[in-house]
Amino acid sequence: MSVSEATTADALPPVNPAARALSPAVVVVALALLLGLQPITTDLYLPALPLIRSALGAAMTQVQMTMALLLLAFGAGQLLMGPLSDRFGRRPVLLGGLALHALGGATAALAPDIQALLLARAVQGVGMAASVVCARAMVRDLYEPHQGAQAMSRALSGLGVIAFASPTVGGLLAAWGGWRAPMAGMAVCSGLLVAFVAWRLPETARRLDPQALRPGLLWQRLVQILSHPGFRAWALLVAGTYGGLVVLLAGTSFVYIGSLGMSTAQYGLALASSSLAYIGGTVHCRRLLPRHGLAGTAGRGALFTLAGGLSMLTLGLSDSHWIPAVLLAQWLYSWGHGFHQPCGQVGAVAPFPRAAGTASALAGFILALVAFGIGLWMGRALDGSLRMLGWGMAIPAMTTAAIAWTLVRRHGDPAHA
Image (cartoon, rainbow, N blue to C red; front, side, top):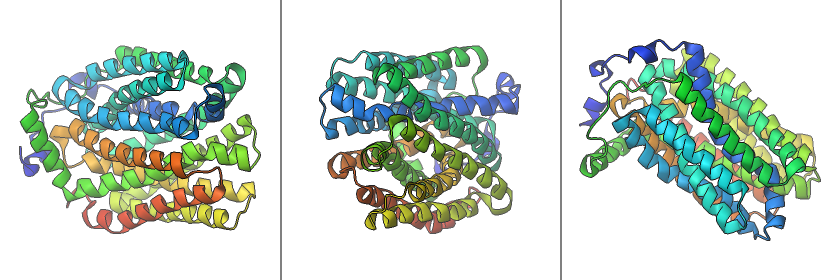
């Protein structure tokens, strides 16, 4: 299949009747829950990171690996889950992946040492890959690009609510039951999602591709997708903005609790406040989309991303411990992230309606690979100081803004990419 054939939406079969009968509200709720598994898996246990370190006698590098290894498995898992969903459909892959995630969460809650915990987090990453890949592919199954961006923006507003609740609930769970309680909470969440998918979600794929898992064809398709300039622009934008978010998520607990003197519960609230800014960003994004399109909206969001990253660096270099200013920088970055996620996730798969699962998987793999590299860097470089946190957020912010104002501006319009 050529790239031109991959981009021809008119040749696609109609949406399956059962999927077409889904109301827009149900679609948005389903997307929010499926995509929301990612912040649950990454954010719920963040307030417990210092507890994991002391309870298991783990080094800082090992504790950071609980995030980095999760993201590596998440990225590699997407390369499998994407073609599987193109071959067998979104629904069976979702059910299997969510069950695997629940198993990983239960195993993590019972882990006797850091090595067992790392293995359980890798299992969770593979299960999370199925949820996220299928959710992104479902948007392309059901909508054209600009409609999909609106639906994705609404769904990511819902994800923001989940992300807001996750560190807050995680902090309360950790204070009540130690570090194992948030891990058990993840298993419960994915178990409930299995029930929701089985009860409410029909198959959305317009056609199944019997050739999707053939190694030669799969490799050819991956190369074709990667060679598309629009795909590269959007995939790199999403990876850039998420890279800064990984630093914010995995690096702030040691800074806020250790250097700024917050309690575990206060840190959970501080991190959760970023989700409110993220929700605001998704709403702002949704209002700008009809007027400026995907590329123009992403370019405007880059202003907030850059302001947040550079503000955090400025505070770190000046050794300022004024918490309101630190939170403002965090909010600015999160506001910009609320622009880039809906635009980038839809833009990356827009040219490939016949291979939405594979395109989503490849974009997710690139994102996870970048995040894994940043996770390794954090384990070595982060020392609990605001200065290193500032550098860790400023570099992805500058990279994201540069991509938005160059590659995305040139190649990001699905109609001309």
